[in-house]
Image 1: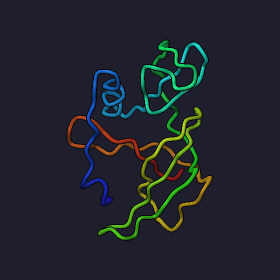
Image 2: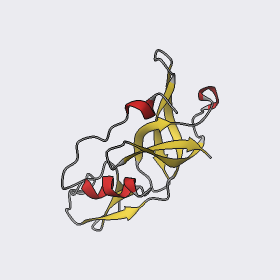
Image 3: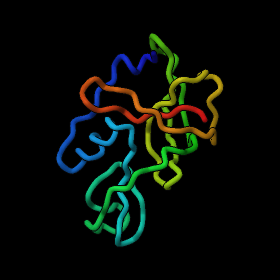
Image 4: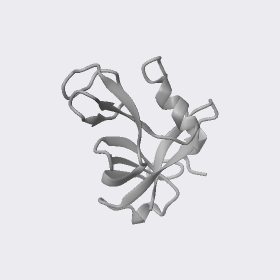
Length: 130
């Protein structure tokens, strides 16, 4: 069990992003896609950050990505990795890299989503090396 798994809780939800958290509980990663300009965005929100349209829909992400940047946090009881992962669909999300040798993590490393139960009916999307 990672250091993070013991302290995970989902951020506060609201009606706009509740489908995202409902999906994580089922092991699905949802993103928002704008029907007006076609761009996919994360953090999910109703208004497209690219063209400001409110014509957005939920899509299921592949869960595949690559590490864009990362940092190993060693000044913790149990060291862990925080990273930006660029998803196959385009958006980059801040997350944790789990279930790996932290010294083996590298930029451009292929990763896949893994869900860590919050114990609150949701799960946090984190990533593991492929």
